[in-house]
Image (cartoon, rainbow over all chains, first blue to last red):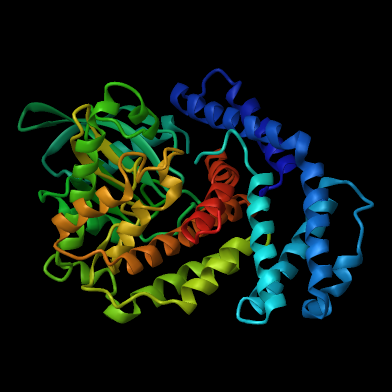
Length: 142
Length: 342
């Protein structure tokens, strides 16, 4: 999730403190606090599963890149990495590298009629669908 | 600037624009929540003219330091003015101030349209549920009226550059792809796949160059309990282009509000039929599909740019985070749905 949750929580802390002052316009206070509440609910929901989601997704992407063999080109090394640092920021950075590699791989195979390319593209779409399921939140707006 | 400082400065500005008025006063100024691309305030302007006390309810929309959508306020202002008094209901525009002396930031003032609702959530409750078919007919008939309008007769080509019919899609896709290139904070494999598909499968040339509202959806119009629509708002992204672009935005699945209906109101086919009847244009299914997918990409670009404005520190309002967190994944799922991949 971007912006990163810790940065947003820090900003919300300041916002709540500013709205604790008695002379804040009531309509502005209501707007600020209702939006803050919605964001806090989203952050709370994302918090518990964030590391699990990233580890799971990074592994799925590495498997896909491994299956692609030579098609991955200079990104092949990404498929061999492991997530041994479980901080969200580190996992997210690895996830970004892997998803960037996936974009390149997807673009390369979608114009290729070879059977293995067709099969690989199907697996890419399936992973993309799964990626949206991992990111679903009950508090989503749509 | 806090509301307390804003009121007297706004009153002074109003007085400077109303030569016959004395005792000009801004009353009950209050910020309206939301407004990710403009700071929006409601107020009552009171003054005396020819010895007679007068009062009018108005809306102030002021540019924030950085907004969800970078738009030209004059384009928005002229779009409202062009349709005022037509079958497309819009509020009356009163003043446009592009300088920063009066209120530190550019702003516009409009008449307030009162006593109607805009919030989508109310639509899923009684008595509004019973009016969905009427509301949908009105919604897409108005969108059709916008498509039917001649932007050159309205003089809008003076502030909105007209593209060639065959290049509408290239200009719009290029513009929003550029936003994604500049603002994305993390890779977007689903959105990038959609862009590649859109470029590989271009739509037919536009039937006409029309006015495109750019953000016509549930939430951006004022409605009543009987399904009447009394104001079409948020013309910030108005431009000239293929009228099917607006139809595609209204069919973007993120505006279904989890109801699997266009705008949360009626099946897509019903919405399209209303639009065709009103606009006099044909909604070619292939072209509608292209423009619907394009609008999913455009939506993602808007949510991404909201995150970017917050990350870069230009606008740290919580409203900027809400679409970034709450819309990106639904928009990705909408892309998958439109592409038949969900």
